Image 1: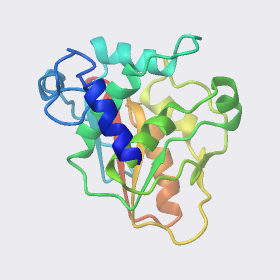
Image 2: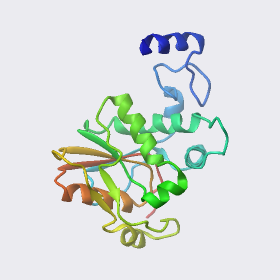
Image 3: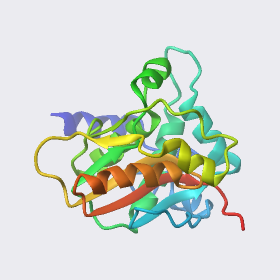
Length: 218
């Protein structure tokens, strides 16, 4: 039934690339041409991660998409385009990684979650797992401390800020391979600290998947 409704909607409102409004070659938010126009950066080497992949550089319009997604206007009908565009970048990043047994987002502390109202990484991870038809758990990993913002901190200070800030709390068998999803990776301090908690719980392989990565310097 739901497939029939979706097909009918596609006929009435054909899918178009959110960026250029052309018809994409496949069911995607961005067409291949627009994806190709976003250079995929090489994220930094991050301790505790087997690898990390990002869909695009955190600059220009990608930075604008991230900001529009994380800080939506207070309207009744939020713009779906930023989430769709970042989702397309996540899918692009994921192509280079082995399939996971579980997808989890980098969590927010409960106090921060109540203040913001949603976890950006959680929304992106949920939609990506759904598209890939792989298991998703938004609460397998928790944030123990409401750490200060990483903005303005150097790499060493970022690592200290998030050290021992996460814990794996999912009951049952520990998955062998986990994808750890976030919107943007900068130095990788947060991803590394979260991955450490996953390994401590018995996860063998942890891969970071991010929509965007800041430019590497030095």
